[in-house]
Image (cartoon, rainbow, N blue to C red; front, top):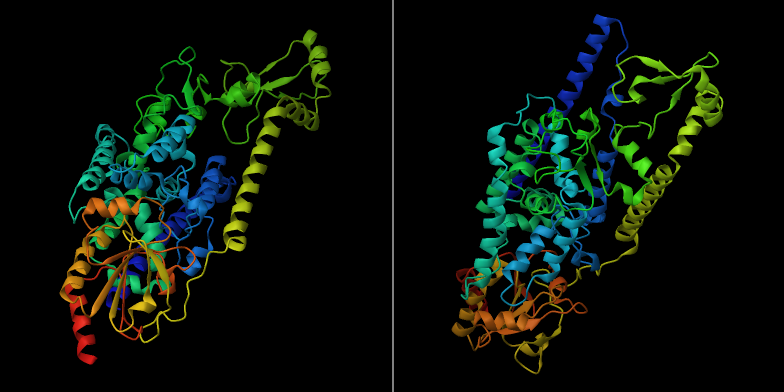
Length: 594
Protein backbone atom coordinates (compact mmCIF):
# COMPACT_ATOMS: atom_id res chain seq x y z
CA UNK A 1 0.00 0.00 0.00
CA UNK A 2 2.90 2.33 0.71
CA UNK A 3 4.27 1.80 -2.81
CA UNK A 4 0.85 2.53 -4.28
CA UNK A 5 0.59 5.75 -2.28
CA UNK A 6 4.09 6.90 -3.32
CA UNK A 7 3.46 6.15 -7.00
CA UNK A 8 0.10 7.92 -7.02
CA UNK A 9 1.61 10.98 -5.32
CA UNK A 10 4.55 11.03 -7.76
CA UNK A 11 2.29 10.73 -10.81
CA UNK A 12 -0.08 13.39 -9.49
CA UNK A 13 2.73 15.84 -8.75
CA UNK A 14 4.34 15.26 -12.14
CA UNK A 15 1.22 15.81 -14.23
CA UNK A 16 0.05 18.58 -11.92
CA UNK A 17 3.25 20.52 -12.60
CA UNK A 18 2.83 20.07 -16.36
CA UNK A 19 -0.78 21.26 -16.19
CA UNK A 20 0.11 24.28 -14.07
CA UNK A 21 2.91 25.17 -16.47
CA UNK A 22 0.55 24.99 -19.47
CA UNK A 23 -2.12 27.12 -17.75
CA UNK A 24 0.42 29.73 -16.63
CA UNK A 25 1.77 29.90 -20.18
CA UNK A 26 -1.68 30.51 -21.67
CA UNK A 27 -2.62 33.11 -19.06
CA UNK A 28 0.68 34.93 -19.55
CA UNK A 29 0.21 35.08 -23.31
CA UNK A 30 -3.38 36.36 -22.99
CA UNK A 31 -2.23 39.10 -20.60
CA UNK A 32 0.53 40.16 -22.97
CA UNK A 33 -1.97 40.34 -25.82
CA UNK A 34 -4.31 42.56 -23.82
CA UNK A 35 -1.40 44.77 -22.77
CA UNK A 36 -0.40 45.22 -26.40
CA UNK A 37 -4.00 46.10 -27.29
CA UNK A 38 -4.06 48.84 -24.63
CA UNK A 39 -0.71 50.23 -25.78
CA UNK A 40 -1.44 50.26 -29.51
CA UNK A 41 -5.21 50.66 -29.43
CA UNK A 42 -5.50 47.96 -32.10
CA UNK A 43 -7.41 44.74 -31.73
CA UNK A 44 -4.96 41.84 -31.63
CA UNK A 45 -5.61 38.45 -33.10
CA UNK A 46 -7.32 36.14 -30.62
CA UNK A 47 -5.42 33.44 -28.75
CA UNK A 48 -7.42 30.72 -30.49
CA UNK A 49 -6.66 32.03 -33.98
CA UNK A 50 -2.96 32.08 -33.17
CA UNK A 51 -2.99 28.57 -31.72
CA UNK A 52 -5.67 26.72 -33.65
CA UNK A 53 -4.37 23.33 -34.80
CA UNK A 54 -2.76 23.06 -38.21
CA UNK A 55 -3.50 20.22 -40.58
CA UNK A 56 -0.34 18.46 -39.40
CA UNK A 57 -1.45 18.74 -35.79
CA UNK A 58 -4.85 17.29 -36.67
CA UNK A 59 -3.15 14.35 -38.39
CA UNK A 60 -0.97 13.80 -35.30
CA UNK A 61 -4.02 13.77 -33.04
CA UNK A 62 -5.81 11.47 -35.45
CA UNK A 63 -2.91 8.98 -35.50
CA UNK A 64 -2.60 8.96 -31.70
CA UNK A 65 -6.31 8.20 -31.34
CA UNK A 66 -6.32 5.56 -34.09
CA UNK A 67 -3.33 3.71 -32.63
CA UNK A 68 -5.01 3.74 -29.19
CA UNK A 69 -8.59 3.11 -30.29
CA UNK A 70 -9.23 0.56 -27.52
CA UNK A 71 -10.34 3.29 -25.12
CA UNK A 72 -12.28 0.88 -22.91
CA UNK A 73 -8.93 -0.67 -21.92
CA UNK A 74 -8.20 2.39 -19.77
CA UNK A 75 -11.42 1.71 -17.82
CA UNK A 76 -11.03 -2.07 -17.51
CA UNK A 77 -7.27 -2.04 -16.88
CA UNK A 78 -6.70 -4.80 -19.44
CA UNK A 79 -4.37 -4.89 -22.44
CA UNK A 80 -6.01 -5.64 -25.77
CA UNK A 81 -4.69 -8.98 -27.11
CA UNK A 82 -6.90 -9.44 -30.20
CA UNK A 83 -6.04 -10.07 -33.82
CA UNK A 84 -4.76 -6.60 -34.72
CA UNK A 85 -2.16 -6.76 -31.94
CA UNK A 86 -0.03 -8.87 -34.29
CA UNK A 87 0.29 -5.86 -36.63
CA UNK A 88 2.79 -3.05 -36.02
CA UNK A 89 1.76 0.60 -36.10
CA UNK A 90 4.25 3.01 -37.74
CA UNK A 91 5.04 5.19 -34.71
CA UNK A 92 6.36 4.59 -31.20
CA UNK A 93 3.32 3.31 -29.30
CA UNK A 94 3.72 0.84 -26.41
CA UNK A 95 2.23 -2.65 -26.81
CA UNK A 96 1.31 -2.67 -23.11
CA UNK A 97 -0.72 0.54 -23.26
CA UNK A 98 -4.33 -0.39 -22.38
CA UNK A 99 -5.59 1.51 -25.40
CA UNK A 100 -3.08 0.16 -27.93
CA UNK A 101 -4.71 -1.61 -30.88
CA UNK A 102 -1.42 -2.69 -32.47
CA UNK A 103 2.14 -3.55 -31.59
CA UNK A 104 5.11 -1.20 -31.36
CA UNK A 105 7.59 -1.83 -34.22
CA UNK A 106 10.56 -1.16 -31.95
CA UNK A 107 9.41 -3.60 -29.26
CA UNK A 108 8.59 -6.19 -31.92
CA UNK A 109 12.05 -5.76 -33.44
CA UNK A 110 13.78 -6.31 -30.10
CA UNK A 111 11.78 -9.44 -29.33
CA UNK A 112 12.34 -10.75 -32.86
CA UNK A 113 16.10 -10.21 -32.59
CA UNK A 114 16.12 -11.94 -29.21
CA UNK A 115 14.54 -15.00 -30.82
CA UNK A 116 16.57 -14.84 -34.02
CA UNK A 117 18.47 -17.96 -32.93
CA UNK A 118 15.34 -19.99 -33.71
CA UNK A 119 13.50 -17.79 -36.22
CA UNK A 120 14.66 -14.99 -38.50
CA UNK A 121 12.77 -11.71 -37.89
CA UNK A 122 11.53 -11.42 -41.48
CA UNK A 123 8.15 -9.89 -40.68
CA UNK A 124 9.39 -7.11 -38.40
CA UNK A 125 12.31 -6.17 -40.63
CA UNK A 126 10.02 -6.25 -43.66
CA UNK A 127 7.41 -3.99 -42.10
CA UNK A 128 10.07 -1.48 -40.99
CA UNK A 129 11.53 -1.40 -44.50
CA UNK A 130 8.02 -0.92 -45.95
CA UNK A 131 7.24 1.96 -43.58
CA UNK A 132 10.65 3.48 -44.28
CA UNK A 133 10.40 3.31 -48.07
CA UNK A 134 6.89 4.73 -48.07
CA UNK A 135 7.20 7.52 -45.51
CA UNK A 136 10.67 7.70 -43.95
CA UNK A 137 10.71 10.19 -41.07
CA UNK A 138 7.39 11.62 -42.21
CA UNK A 139 6.14 9.10 -39.63
CA UNK A 140 8.01 11.08 -36.96
CA UNK A 141 6.51 14.38 -38.10
CA UNK A 142 2.93 13.25 -38.64
CA UNK A 143 2.15 9.83 -37.13
CA UNK A 144 4.12 9.37 -33.89
CA UNK A 145 2.21 9.96 -30.61
CA UNK A 146 5.48 10.53 -28.72
CA UNK A 147 6.41 13.31 -31.13
CA UNK A 148 3.00 14.92 -30.60
CA UNK A 149 3.42 14.86 -26.84
CA UNK A 150 6.82 16.53 -27.02
CA UNK A 151 5.56 19.27 -29.32
CA UNK A 152 2.67 20.03 -26.96
CA UNK A 153 5.08 20.24 -24.01
CA UNK A 154 7.31 22.58 -26.01
CA UNK A 155 4.39 25.01 -26.30
CA UNK A 156 4.63 25.78 -22.58
CA UNK A 157 6.00 29.31 -22.36
CA UNK A 158 9.59 29.12 -21.10
CA UNK A 159 13.01 30.12 -22.41
CA UNK A 160 13.99 27.67 -25.15
CA UNK A 161 17.34 26.07 -25.86
CA UNK A 162 18.25 26.74 -29.49
CA UNK A 163 19.99 24.17 -31.62
CA UNK A 164 23.75 24.41 -31.91
CA UNK A 165 26.82 22.39 -32.72
CA UNK A 166 26.37 20.57 -29.40
CA UNK A 167 22.82 19.48 -30.16
CA UNK A 168 23.89 18.37 -33.63
CA UNK A 169 26.56 16.13 -32.09
CA UNK A 170 24.07 14.80 -29.53
CA UNK A 171 21.69 13.90 -32.35
CA UNK A 172 23.99 10.98 -33.20
CA UNK A 173 23.41 9.49 -29.75
CA UNK A 174 20.22 7.80 -30.98
CA UNK A 175 22.30 5.67 -33.35
CA UNK A 176 24.31 4.45 -30.37
CA UNK A 177 21.06 3.66 -28.56
CA UNK A 178 19.86 1.78 -31.65
CA UNK A 179 23.04 -0.27 -31.93
CA UNK A 180 23.37 -1.10 -28.22
CA UNK A 181 19.89 -1.26 -26.69
CA UNK A 182 17.79 -2.32 -29.69
CA UNK A 183 20.18 -4.63 -31.53
CA UNK A 184 23.18 -5.77 -29.48
CA UNK A 185 21.68 -6.51 -26.06
CA UNK A 186 18.58 -8.41 -27.33
CA UNK A 187 20.80 -10.45 -29.68
CA UNK A 188 23.36 -11.25 -26.98
CA UNK A 189 20.79 -12.35 -24.42
CA UNK A 190 18.77 -14.21 -27.04
CA UNK A 191 21.80 -16.21 -28.13
CA UNK A 192 22.94 -17.00 -24.58
CA UNK A 193 22.57 -20.69 -23.94
CA UNK A 194 22.07 -20.54 -20.19
CA UNK A 195 19.27 -20.92 -17.72
CA UNK A 196 19.38 -17.24 -16.80
CA UNK A 197 19.51 -16.06 -20.38
CA UNK A 198 16.34 -14.85 -22.03
CA UNK A 199 14.93 -12.17 -24.29
CA UNK A 200 15.77 -8.70 -22.99
CA UNK A 201 14.15 -5.85 -24.97
CA UNK A 202 16.67 -3.45 -23.44
CA UNK A 203 15.35 -0.20 -24.87
CA UNK A 204 11.78 -0.97 -23.77
CA UNK A 205 12.99 -2.19 -20.39
CA UNK A 206 15.40 0.59 -19.46
CA UNK A 207 14.63 3.73 -21.51
CA UNK A 208 11.40 3.93 -23.50
CA UNK A 209 9.21 6.79 -22.19
CA UNK A 210 6.23 5.53 -24.23
CA UNK A 211 6.36 2.27 -22.29
CA UNK A 212 6.48 4.05 -18.94
CA UNK A 213 3.76 6.54 -19.78
CA UNK A 214 1.36 4.41 -21.83
CA UNK A 215 2.17 0.95 -20.50
CA UNK A 216 3.17 1.23 -16.85
CA UNK A 217 1.23 4.35 -15.81
CA UNK A 218 -1.69 3.42 -18.05
CA UNK A 219 -2.09 0.18 -16.08
CA UNK A 220 -1.15 1.47 -12.63
CA UNK A 221 -3.74 4.25 -12.56
CA UNK A 222 -6.51 1.65 -12.75
CA UNK A 223 -7.61 0.32 -9.33
CA UNK A 224 -8.16 -3.13 -10.88
CA UNK A 225 -4.37 -3.46 -11.20
CA UNK A 226 -3.58 -2.68 -7.57
CA UNK A 227 -1.67 -5.98 -7.21
CA UNK A 228 0.88 -4.76 -9.76
CA UNK A 229 2.26 -2.33 -7.18
CA UNK A 230 3.90 -5.26 -5.44
CA UNK A 231 6.04 -5.78 -8.56
CA UNK A 232 7.43 -2.25 -8.58
CA UNK A 233 11.07 -1.83 -7.75
CA UNK A 234 14.25 0.04 -8.69
CA UNK A 235 13.64 -0.53 -12.41
CA UNK A 236 10.29 1.27 -12.35
CA UNK A 237 11.83 4.10 -10.30
CA UNK A 238 14.58 4.46 -12.90
CA UNK A 239 12.18 4.49 -15.85
CA UNK A 240 9.87 6.95 -14.14
CA UNK A 241 12.84 9.28 -13.57
CA UNK A 242 13.81 8.92 -17.24
CA UNK A 243 10.24 9.85 -18.24
CA UNK A 244 10.27 12.92 -15.98
CA UNK A 245 13.64 14.09 -17.35
CA UNK A 246 12.49 13.68 -20.97
CA UNK A 247 9.21 15.50 -20.34
CA UNK A 248 10.88 18.39 -18.53
CA UNK A 249 13.57 18.62 -21.21
CA UNK A 250 10.87 18.68 -23.91
CA UNK A 251 9.54 21.92 -22.41
CA UNK A 252 12.87 23.63 -23.15
CA UNK A 253 14.22 21.60 -26.11
CA UNK A 254 12.18 20.91 -29.22
CA UNK A 255 11.55 17.15 -29.54
CA UNK A 256 14.54 16.28 -27.36
CA UNK A 257 13.73 12.56 -27.30
CA UNK A 258 13.30 12.38 -31.09
CA UNK A 259 16.51 14.28 -31.70
CA UNK A 260 18.80 12.58 -29.19
CA UNK A 261 17.44 9.17 -28.13
CA UNK A 262 14.75 7.69 -30.38
CA UNK A 263 16.11 4.61 -32.23
CA UNK A 264 12.93 4.30 -34.32
CA UNK A 265 13.61 7.73 -35.78
CA UNK A 266 17.19 6.61 -36.44
CA UNK A 267 15.88 3.62 -38.42
CA UNK A 268 13.48 5.70 -40.48
CA UNK A 269 16.22 8.28 -41.05
CA UNK A 270 18.12 5.73 -43.14
CA UNK A 271 15.20 5.72 -45.61
CA UNK A 272 14.51 9.47 -45.68
CA UNK A 273 16.39 10.03 -48.92
CA UNK A 274 14.56 7.23 -50.74
CA UNK A 275 11.05 7.51 -49.21
CA UNK A 276 8.14 7.97 -51.58
CA UNK A 277 6.61 10.75 -49.46
CA UNK A 278 8.55 13.57 -47.84
CA UNK A 279 10.03 16.96 -48.65
CA UNK A 280 12.51 17.63 -51.42
CA UNK A 281 14.66 20.54 -52.52
CA UNK A 282 14.89 21.74 -56.12
CA UNK A 283 18.53 22.76 -56.49
CA UNK A 284 17.76 24.68 -59.67
CA UNK A 285 15.52 27.08 -57.73
CA UNK A 286 17.49 27.15 -54.47
CA UNK A 287 19.43 30.34 -53.76
CA UNK A 288 21.35 28.89 -50.76
CA UNK A 289 19.91 31.53 -48.45
CA UNK A 290 19.92 29.04 -45.55
CA UNK A 291 16.51 30.08 -44.19
CA UNK A 292 15.17 26.51 -44.28
CA UNK A 293 18.03 25.18 -42.13
CA UNK A 294 18.14 28.13 -39.74
CA UNK A 295 14.36 28.14 -39.13
CA UNK A 296 14.11 24.36 -38.68
CA UNK A 297 14.10 23.26 -35.02
CA UNK A 298 15.59 19.86 -35.86
CA UNK A 299 19.34 19.34 -36.31
CA UNK A 300 19.28 19.14 -40.10
CA UNK A 301 22.14 20.00 -42.42
CA UNK A 302 19.90 20.24 -45.47
CA UNK A 303 16.26 19.70 -46.35
CA UNK A 304 15.28 16.02 -46.35
CA UNK A 305 18.37 14.59 -44.66
CA UNK A 306 18.29 11.87 -41.98
CA UNK A 307 17.34 14.35 -39.23
CA UNK A 308 14.44 15.92 -41.17
CA UNK A 309 10.99 14.87 -39.91
CA UNK A 310 9.31 16.15 -43.10
CA UNK A 311 6.97 18.49 -41.25
CA UNK A 312 6.86 20.81 -44.28
CA UNK A 313 7.23 24.04 -42.29
CA UNK A 314 10.33 24.96 -44.29
CA UNK A 315 8.11 25.49 -47.34
CA UNK A 316 6.62 28.62 -45.76
CA UNK A 317 9.99 30.34 -45.29
CA UNK A 318 11.61 29.49 -48.61
CA UNK A 319 11.62 32.72 -50.69
CA UNK A 320 12.47 30.85 -53.91
CA UNK A 321 9.72 28.21 -53.42
CA UNK A 322 12.35 25.53 -53.99
CA UNK A 323 10.92 23.07 -51.45
CA UNK A 324 8.01 20.79 -52.35
CA UNK A 325 6.48 17.43 -51.46
CA UNK A 326 7.90 14.28 -52.95
CA UNK A 327 5.26 12.13 -54.56
CA UNK A 328 2.77 14.99 -54.94
CA UNK A 329 2.66 14.65 -58.72
CA UNK A 330 1.58 11.03 -58.35
CA UNK A 331 -1.64 12.19 -56.71
CA UNK A 332 -2.19 15.67 -58.14
CA UNK A 333 -2.08 17.35 -61.52
CA UNK A 334 1.45 18.81 -61.98
CA UNK A 335 0.15 22.41 -61.91
CA UNK A 336 -1.76 21.74 -58.69
CA UNK A 337 1.28 20.10 -57.14
CA UNK A 338 3.44 23.09 -58.01
CA UNK A 339 0.80 25.39 -56.53
CA UNK A 340 0.87 23.43 -53.29
CA UNK A 341 4.62 23.82 -53.08
CA UNK A 342 4.51 27.55 -53.75
CA UNK A 343 2.07 28.53 -51.01
CA UNK A 344 1.98 28.18 -47.23
CA UNK A 345 0.05 25.22 -45.88
CA UNK A 346 -2.53 27.16 -43.92
CA UNK A 347 -5.57 28.10 -45.98
CA UNK A 348 -3.67 29.52 -48.97
CA UNK A 349 -4.86 29.23 -52.59
CA UNK A 350 -3.30 26.73 -54.94
CA UNK A 351 -2.82 29.31 -57.71
CA UNK A 352 -2.88 33.14 -57.96
CA UNK A 353 -6.35 34.59 -57.62
CA UNK A 354 -7.35 37.83 -59.23
CA UNK A 355 -7.97 40.60 -56.76
CA UNK A 356 -10.81 42.55 -58.33
CA UNK A 357 -10.57 46.21 -59.11
CA UNK A 358 -13.66 48.39 -59.25
CA UNK A 359 -12.49 50.04 -62.46
CA UNK A 360 -13.25 48.49 -65.81
CA UNK A 361 -10.28 47.52 -67.93
CA UNK A 362 -7.82 46.87 -65.07
CA UNK A 363 -7.38 44.19 -62.47
CA UNK A 364 -4.97 43.94 -59.56
CA UNK A 365 -3.01 40.97 -58.33
CA UNK A 366 -2.00 40.76 -54.69
CA UNK A 367 1.76 41.06 -54.49
CA UNK A 368 1.99 37.84 -52.44
CA UNK A 369 0.26 36.00 -55.31
CA UNK A 370 2.05 37.84 -58.09
CA UNK A 371 5.09 36.84 -60.05
CA UNK A 372 8.39 36.21 -58.31
CA UNK A 373 10.18 39.46 -57.63
CA UNK A 374 7.09 41.64 -57.16
CA UNK A 375 7.77 44.13 -54.33
CA UNK A 376 6.02 43.50 -51.04
CA UNK A 377 2.75 45.27 -50.27
CA UNK A 378 2.45 46.56 -53.84
CA UNK A 379 0.27 45.66 -56.78
CA UNK A 380 0.63 45.65 -60.49
CA UNK A 381 -1.95 46.19 -63.20
CA UNK A 382 -2.99 44.03 -66.08
CA UNK A 383 -2.63 46.13 -69.26
CA UNK A 384 -5.91 47.52 -70.65
CA UNK A 385 -5.56 45.50 -73.86
CA UNK A 386 -5.45 42.32 -71.74
CA UNK A 387 -8.36 43.22 -69.50
CA UNK A 388 -11.07 41.87 -71.78
CA UNK A 389 -9.18 38.61 -72.24
CA UNK A 390 -8.70 38.26 -68.48
CA UNK A 391 -12.37 39.05 -67.91
CA UNK A 392 -13.41 36.46 -70.50
CA UNK A 393 -11.25 33.80 -68.87
CA UNK A 394 -12.24 34.53 -65.30
CA UNK A 395 -15.73 36.02 -65.47
CA UNK A 396 -17.02 39.03 -63.55
CA UNK A 397 -14.54 40.18 -60.97
CA UNK A 398 -16.49 39.68 -57.79
CA UNK A 399 -15.39 38.00 -54.57
CA UNK A 400 -17.80 35.12 -55.14
CA UNK A 401 -16.65 34.51 -58.69
CA UNK A 402 -12.99 34.65 -57.65
CA UNK A 403 -13.57 31.95 -55.07
CA UNK A 404 -15.45 29.89 -57.61
CA UNK A 405 -12.67 30.37 -60.16
CA UNK A 406 -10.09 29.27 -57.63
CA UNK A 407 -12.18 26.25 -56.65
CA UNK A 408 -12.39 25.18 -60.30
CA UNK A 409 -8.64 25.45 -60.75
CA UNK A 410 -7.98 23.40 -57.62
CA UNK A 411 -10.88 21.03 -58.09
CA UNK A 412 -8.85 17.86 -58.32
CA UNK A 413 -6.76 18.70 -55.25
CA UNK A 414 -9.85 19.68 -53.26
CA UNK A 415 -11.74 16.49 -54.00
CA UNK A 416 -8.66 14.40 -53.38
CA UNK A 417 -8.26 15.95 -49.94
CA UNK A 418 -11.98 15.60 -49.27
CA UNK A 419 -11.90 11.90 -50.18
CA UNK A 420 -8.78 11.33 -48.06
CA UNK A 421 -10.24 12.99 -44.97
CA UNK A 422 -13.55 11.17 -45.44
CA UNK A 423 -11.81 7.80 -45.67
CA UNK A 424 -9.59 8.61 -42.69
CA UNK A 425 -12.52 9.64 -40.49
CA UNK A 426 -14.48 6.57 -41.56
CA UNK A 427 -11.51 4.38 -40.55
CA UNK A 428 -11.20 6.14 -37.18
CA UNK A 429 -14.90 5.90 -36.34
CA UNK A 430 -14.93 2.29 -37.49
CA UNK A 431 -11.97 1.45 -35.25
CA UNK A 432 -13.50 3.19 -32.23
CA UNK A 433 -16.81 1.39 -32.70
CA UNK A 434 -15.13 -1.99 -33.28
CA UNK A 435 -12.73 -1.94 -30.34
CA UNK A 436 -15.10 -0.39 -27.82
CA UNK A 437 -18.52 -1.79 -28.76
CA UNK A 438 -18.31 -4.72 -31.17
CA UNK A 439 -15.18 -6.71 -30.30
CA UNK A 440 -15.64 -8.67 -27.10
CA UNK A 441 -12.63 -10.36 -25.58
CA UNK A 442 -13.29 -13.33 -23.37
CA UNK A 443 -13.69 -11.83 -19.90
CA UNK A 444 -11.65 -13.21 -17.04
CA UNK A 445 -13.44 -15.87 -15.07
CA UNK A 446 -13.92 -14.27 -11.66
CA UNK A 447 -15.39 -17.28 -9.85
CA UNK A 448 -12.97 -19.50 -7.97
CA UNK A 449 -9.74 -17.53 -8.25
CA UNK A 450 -9.36 -16.07 -4.77
CA UNK A 451 -7.52 -17.58 -1.79
CA UNK A 452 -9.93 -20.02 -0.13
CA UNK A 453 -11.86 -20.76 -3.35
CA UNK A 454 -11.84 -24.13 -5.03
CA UNK A 455 -9.91 -23.71 -8.28
CA UNK A 456 -11.65 -24.63 -11.54
CA UNK A 457 -10.48 -27.86 -13.14
CA UNK A 458 -8.85 -27.84 -16.54
CA UNK A 459 -7.07 -30.24 -18.85
CA UNK A 460 -4.07 -29.05 -20.89
CA UNK A 461 -1.66 -30.64 -23.36
CA UNK A 462 1.74 -31.53 -21.95
CA UNK A 463 4.98 -30.98 -23.83
CA UNK A 464 7.18 -34.05 -24.42
CA UNK A 465 4.33 -36.41 -23.47
CA UNK A 466 1.46 -37.87 -25.48
CA UNK A 467 -1.11 -37.16 -22.79
CA UNK A 468 -3.03 -34.35 -21.16
CA UNK A 469 -2.48 -32.98 -17.71
CA UNK A 470 -5.66 -32.82 -15.60
CA UNK A 471 -5.68 -30.82 -12.39
CA UNK A 472 -8.47 -32.97 -10.97
CA UNK A 473 -6.12 -35.99 -11.12
CA UNK A 474 -3.71 -34.27 -8.71
CA UNK A 475 -6.02 -34.41 -5.70
CA UNK A 476 -4.14 -35.58 -2.61
CA UNK A 477 -0.99 -33.66 -3.55
CA UNK A 478 -0.09 -29.99 -3.40
CA UNK A 479 -0.25 -28.50 -6.89
CA UNK A 480 1.97 -25.55 -7.83
CA UNK A 481 0.97 -23.75 -11.05
CA UNK A 482 3.32 -21.26 -12.67
CA UNK A 483 2.29 -19.24 -15.74
CA UNK A 484 5.00 -17.88 -18.05
CA UNK A 485 5.87 -16.76 -21.59
CA UNK A 486 9.08 -17.08 -23.57
CA UNK A 487 9.61 -13.30 -23.87
CA UNK A 488 9.26 -12.69 -20.11
CA UNK A 489 12.73 -12.50 -18.56
CA UNK A 490 11.56 -12.77 -14.90
CA UNK A 491 9.58 -15.86 -15.89
CA UNK A 492 12.64 -17.56 -17.36
CA UNK A 493 14.81 -16.64 -14.39
CA UNK A 494 12.47 -18.21 -11.84
CA UNK A 495 11.68 -21.51 -13.65
CA UNK A 496 14.72 -23.34 -12.18
CA UNK A 497 13.33 -22.56 -8.71
CA UNK A 498 10.19 -24.54 -9.52
CA UNK A 499 12.26 -27.48 -10.72
CA UNK A 500 14.21 -27.38 -7.46
CA UNK A 501 10.91 -27.42 -5.55
CA UNK A 502 9.66 -30.42 -7.55
CA UNK A 503 12.85 -32.36 -6.78
CA UNK A 504 12.84 -31.38 -3.08
CA UNK A 505 9.24 -32.53 -2.43
CA UNK A 506 8.48 -35.21 -5.05
CA UNK A 507 5.96 -37.11 -2.91
CA UNK A 508 3.91 -34.12 -1.83
CA UNK A 509 4.14 -31.58 -4.63
CA UNK A 510 3.33 -31.51 -8.34
CA UNK A 511 4.68 -28.57 -10.32
CA UNK A 512 3.06 -27.52 -13.61
CA UNK A 513 4.67 -24.73 -15.66
CA UNK A 514 2.05 -23.39 -18.09
CA UNK A 515 2.89 -21.32 -21.16
CA UNK A 516 0.50 -18.47 -22.08
CA UNK A 517 -2.26 -19.14 -24.60
CA UNK A 518 -1.83 -15.95 -26.67
CA UNK A 519 1.73 -16.67 -27.82
CA UNK A 520 2.12 -18.64 -31.04
CA UNK A 521 5.67 -19.97 -31.47
CA UNK A 522 7.76 -23.12 -31.14
CA UNK A 523 7.70 -23.35 -27.36
CA UNK A 524 9.03 -26.91 -27.36
CA UNK A 525 12.17 -25.79 -29.19
CA UNK A 526 12.61 -22.94 -26.69
CA UNK A 527 12.26 -25.32 -23.72
CA UNK A 528 14.73 -27.76 -25.29
CA UNK A 529 17.25 -25.00 -26.01
CA UNK A 530 17.11 -23.98 -22.35
CA UNK A 531 17.79 -27.54 -21.22
CA UNK A 532 14.44 -27.90 -19.46
CA UNK A 533 13.07 -30.82 -21.48
CA UNK A 534 14.23 -33.35 -18.86
CA UNK A 535 12.82 -31.44 -15.90
CA UNK A 536 10.67 -33.22 -13.36
CA UNK A 537 8.19 -30.36 -13.55
CA UNK A 538 5.44 -30.66 -16.17
CA UNK A 539 5.47 -28.16 -19.04
CA UNK A 540 1.96 -27.43 -20.29
CA UNK A 541 0.41 -25.25 -23.00
CA UNK A 542 -2.56 -23.11 -22.05
CA UNK A 543 -5.25 -22.73 -24.70
CA UNK A 544 -7.64 -19.93 -25.56
CA UNK A 545 -10.74 -22.03 -24.92
CA UNK A 546 -10.00 -23.03 -21.32
CA UNK A 547 -7.60 -20.15 -20.58
CA UNK A 548 -6.35 -21.41 -17.24
CA UNK A 549 -4.40 -18.17 -16.75
CA UNK A 550 -7.51 -16.00 -16.77
CA UNK A 551 -9.65 -18.53 -14.96
CA UNK A 552 -7.25 -18.27 -12.02
CA UNK A 553 -7.31 -14.46 -11.99
CA UNK A 554 -4.51 -13.59 -14.41
CA UNK A 555 -4.96 -10.44 -16.48
CA UNK A 556 -2.20 -8.92 -18.53
CA UNK A 557 1.24 -9.63 -17.06
CA UNK A 558 3.39 -12.68 -16.43
CA UNK A 559 4.65 -14.49 -14.39
CA UNK A 560 1.89 -15.66 -12.05
CA UNK A 561 2.04 -18.43 -9.47
CA UNK A 562 -0.90 -20.23 -7.84
CA UNK A 563 -0.64 -22.97 -5.19
CA UNK A 564 -3.51 -25.41 -4.54
CA UNK A 565 -3.77 -27.63 -1.47
CA UNK A 566 -4.51 -31.36 -1.64
CA UNK A 567 -8.25 -30.63 -1.89
CA UNK A 568 -7.83 -28.28 -4.88
CA UNK A 569 -8.38 -25.06 -2.93
CA UNK A 570 -6.31 -21.95 -3.63
CA UNK A 571 -3.97 -21.16 -0.72
CA UNK A 572 -1.52 -18.81 -2.41
CA UNK A 573 -1.53 -16.56 -5.49
CA UNK A 574 1.13 -14.13 -6.67
CA UNK A 575 1.14 -11.88 -9.73
CA UNK A 576 4.85 -11.37 -10.38
CA UNK A 577 8.09 -13.13 -9.57
CA UNK A 578 8.44 -15.45 -6.62
CA UNK A 579 11.60 -16.80 -4.96
CA UNK A 580 12.39 -20.38 -3.97
CA UNK A 581 12.38 -19.35 -0.31
CA UNK A 582 8.80 -18.09 -0.60
CA UNK A 583 7.70 -21.24 -2.41
CA UNK A 584 9.29 -23.55 0.14
CA UNK A 585 7.76 -21.60 3.03
CA UNK A 586 4.28 -22.01 1.54
CA UNK A 587 4.82 -25.74 1.00
CA UNK A 588 6.07 -26.27 4.58
CA UNK A 589 3.09 -24.40 6.02
CA UNK A 590 0.72 -26.57 3.97
CA UNK A 591 2.43 -29.81 4.98
CA UNK A 592 2.31 -28.81 8.65
CA UNK A 593 -1.38 -27.92 8.49
CA UNK A 594 -2.24 -31.21 6.83
